[in-house]
Amino acid sequence: MEINEYFTTPDLNLATVVSLSYPLDSIERLSDKKRAFVFKRDSGLDQLLEAFWRRETRVEPLQFSEQRKMLLSRLDNEEGCGF
Image 1 (cartoon, rainbow, N blue to C red):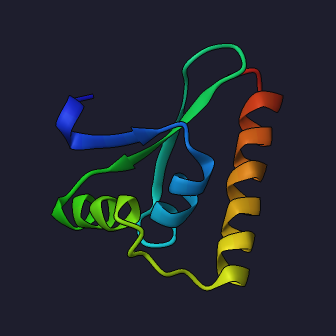
Image 2 (tube, helix red, strand yellow):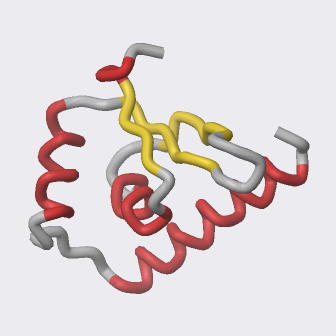
């Protein structure tokens, strides 16, 4: 995996915002208890990340909550499979 080809974050809230616009590529194990979300990177994703850190991103609360639950479910499934 090339460093600049993918964006990886262990931050659930950031991953939730990103996953509303970009498909989750995979979940990477960082340690026994820590995972990171991996997304394919492009210029649009970089702009979204900049907007997120500048606090310019707006998300509908219910959509955010449901997407966050989906990511948590994916984490639970990854841990349950012994990955």
